[in-house]
Length: 288
Ligand SMILES: *[C@@H]1O[C@H](CO)[C@@H](O)[C@H](O)[C@H]1NC(C)=O
Ligand SMILES: *[C@@H]1O[C@H](CO)[C@@H](O)[C@H](O)[C@H]1NC(C)=O
Ligand SMILES: *[C@@H]1O[C@H](CO)[C@@H](O)[C@H](O)[C@H]1NC(C)=O
Ligand SMILES: *[C@@H]1O[C@H](CO)[C@@H](O)[C@H](O)[C@H]1NC(C)=O
Ligand SMILES: *[C@@H]1O[C@H](CO)[C@@H](O)[C@H](O)[C@H]1NC(C)=O
Ligand SMILES: [Zn+2]
Image (cartoon, rainbow, N blue to C red; front, side, top):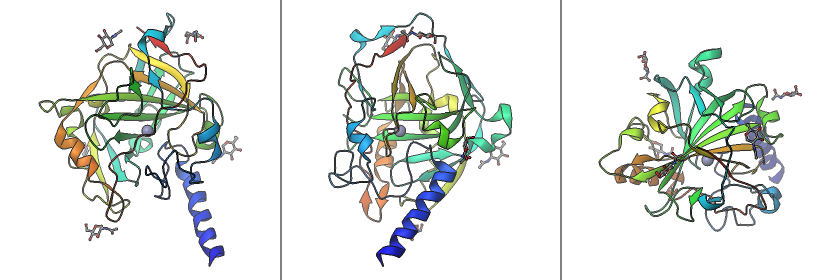
């Protein structure tokens, strides 16, 4: 019994590893955000690195101790300003959009360059982090104040494959966008309003067209930069973070819609943010 369960689990892990090793959300619902299976639990699905790593994410951003880097250029988003089809899935940990590799070979797959990054990084997914009420939800905080929502646009270094990208400090470049509450302006995420067809994980996936630039601040010059990790298992310290200084907006009905998602049958994913991690001497840079 144990043997076959183990085998099935192992095969699951293997198949995930090959297809989606670096989605930064993980797949399967075997870990979560509760006391029992969350980031601070003894749940082995959060490996040792999550507890002992010295370059972990998220962090608090203290603007007064951030160092300005004069030699950064703006982040350049290519392929972000036209609609393209994505697959939206509730993976039990977040609502995740994938399928950017199918937007076309080469230039049509959205990617980022500039901003002091090492070359070109292709978009592999975006997903959202939210909280049980509007006073929290974001992973990164500004002066120890959370935002109600944070979006992560996960990019993989173009010269590396998924496995390799998790093994070097700059294998993944994640753009984080903070959202403030504004009931008059649901526009940035409105294109996802029809995406949440089923609340159960993996039950349905919805395909729809999204324009990525609608969800990203127009000012791509002002951002915070630091080296960190996945905020989900296995907490790999392979991330270059760019946290946009300018915020986007989300309406209350959209946050309520997100909180309806289940981690499993009848268990609401009321929040899916990891708690703040120590800086351990890291310097946070800013551009602009
Ligand atoms: C500032 O940015 C430049 C260009 O990306 C980089 O070479 C340099 O190391 C950065 N400075 C610091 C203090 O990180
Ligand atoms: C990734 O690249 C490495 C080095 O070229 C190779 O050994 C490995 O098999 C590749 N992995 C996958 C999943 O393609
Ligand atoms: C999935 O959706 C269907 C109908 O949309 C529903 O009957 C079912 O209970 C849902 N959950 C699971 C886990 O299949
Ligand atoms: C996305 O837009 C294209 C081009 O306008 C269209 O052909 C396609 O049917 C749309 N896909 C979806 C899922 O709406
Ligand atoms: C960063 O955002 C704050 C708050 O919106 C704004 O006051 C400041 O001017 C922005 N900084 C830059 C460099 O854009
Ligand atoms: Zn994330």
